[in-house]
Image (cartoon, rainbow, N blue to C red; front, top):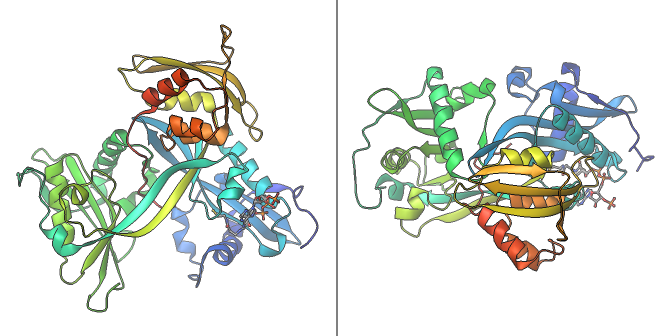
Length: 410
Ligand SMILES: CC(C)(COP(=O)(O)OP(=O)(O)OC[C@H]1O[C@@H](n2cnc3c(N)ncnc32)[C@H](O)[C@@H]1OP(=O)(O)O)[C@@H](O)C(=O)NCCC(=O)NCCS
């Protein structure tokens, strides 16, 4: 190992760094890296949201942040999707990773983001920076012949939609379908408009996309498929559902049947099947887990996150918190969250009326606010210092909702 690098100056990236960053990233994450392709630059993170560190005349560390919206309780949090965090092997363990991620968090908060989320390779490193578990991206494998006969519970009904291949003009309608789904769930992302070609399935030759359109031309459903080398030697190809979303169960069934129509060329399809997705509700017990990644998040701006998240309209409640955040100044300290008729208010200088606040670190608070961690479980684990039974019950009522899940990998 070389001398400690935690004081190395950090800078934003420029296009001249892209090839070196591709090499750094390949060394950190891939078995056999693809050749550097400058044509893929439109899909890269903006350089203004990409930090690098140089040592010995070369780039030795990198951290970047996509810009998403992430939805919790029906409300949208401006989200930094942290990606590509890598330190050159010979410089690891000297504080450089901590320094570059901390600076990235400050940078994206200054740009208006209120939460940062990422798929961690290592949890301990990110926990030390205030990240807590927040969502799951789970992929399952399901037989295509099973999908081919998908029907809504209660039997077939005509969804009144036409399914056709997607064009770029459909992208705004697709985004609305995805946002309507995100409002119903917890943890789902929306995307920057410049990724339209990906949504439309025209960004790569092995990707296909369809929309389900109703009688007046409104997009009601969306399917994005990828073809890959077969999993099973008797298959011609395997099918991977990158995304499938629909406004109603009849349209959802029609889109799953379309996936199933690749039987028997493809024997199985891989897809995210969260609780409540139709193959889980209506299918046979032939679903097998294929892959699971946990998402970690950390609130960048506690007050704005609490005000942006959605809250139930029919539950009123108030809790007094004392937040501990050693990494991002401004988050720590006492606050009172009050929710009335679905409207949140945050008082940063709260009257305590003699009550002791609930002591909570930023990682735990994030896991609670995202809906990943049940407040009673957190209290049981000793993560809510001084919380009374009434505090826990109030938090539970306010934060009740579907288990978070995420579809996109970044
Ligand atoms: C993860 C990585 C970015 C950390 O950078 P780094 O400069 O080595 O990290 P730091 O020196 O700042 O370490 C800070 C703390 O994080 C933890 N940590 C760091 N690397 C870790 C690892 N590989 N596994 C588990 N914990 C780790 C340690 O607790 C460390 O604290 P300590 O020094 O008191 O033990 C670097 O190891 C790396 O590039 N790894 C390969 C790519 C990768 O995993 N990237 C993260 C992708 S999500």
